[in-house]
Length: 387
Image (tube, rainbow, N blue to C red; front, side, top):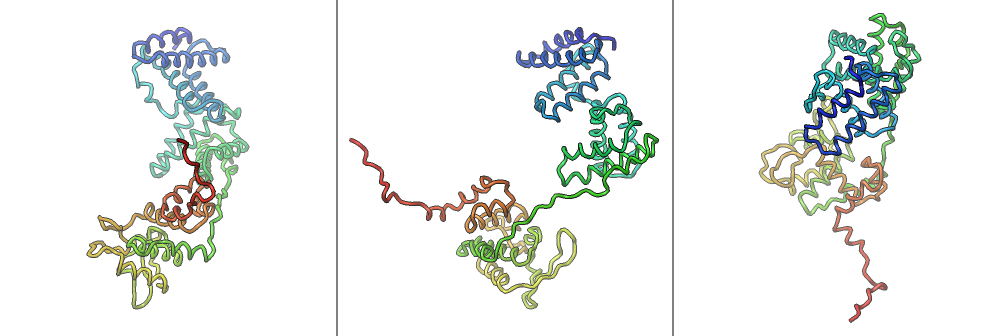
């Protein structure tokens, strides 16, 4: 472009002055441009070049990942240099134009062609669009990180670099997502091998990746009984909730299968429940245990809305009388049962909350029973107000 950086900043400053920004916004741009100018000075660069922009954006991204700058500052630094790019290219700046950039713009001149070749290669692999996009994202992340490790040429990539890349990704993905990320790295290595960039790279990718396993909270029988007996069976919703809790405790059915249960799925004569599981599509036959059957029958006879057209067993207590939702409705039923009958630390563990504070609002919801815990003022009577 043969444009001096100092002169370009002056030109960009003039270009944004007529956009009506607040003075503070103009000052932020000027500060951000000064950071780019300092970076170029350290690199010994006087003229504005695309390669320098890519290197600068990589440095900004690396500092953000390491916690050196916050997200808002990363966006400001990135936006400011894109404004410079547009002014250098067109001589002016139009608001919003610089937002339309390609994700690969952050890659260096050495790695961007590799990424583009990889994306074209993925297009011929017969993969789903979502899978191709995911693999491309992981590849882009790895290629943008390699210069930080000192790798400036993909042909110099070693197995140790591949292993380090997997460890790097481990700091950016949740354990449950790392299995897919590792697969993406393996596919990238296979592309590099097929394209002649390297040999044996895929051997450095782990063939197995451990998954984080959380221990399930198991309640003793007396606590389970307390939960199932906690609903107020004098109310229709209480009869329904007790039947749901018993069905869950005795059969272990998934919420989606419980709310999907239909009247025809229950064989009262044979004493069994037969349903098609939502997740697997297989038919499951379970014995209709006595207490479960009695609770369901009690709800059908005395709690289920009369004349409801929906043939699901468990319906909303208020119009419209349709099936419950598998997530929100049953979570509410279980949460209220825990709040009525179980100590707070157990509620937090069973419901998957990280801390006790997250579960406190379930206790607050049971106002009736909480009132029974209130103390009177015996022994601590308030003093009579002075006249």
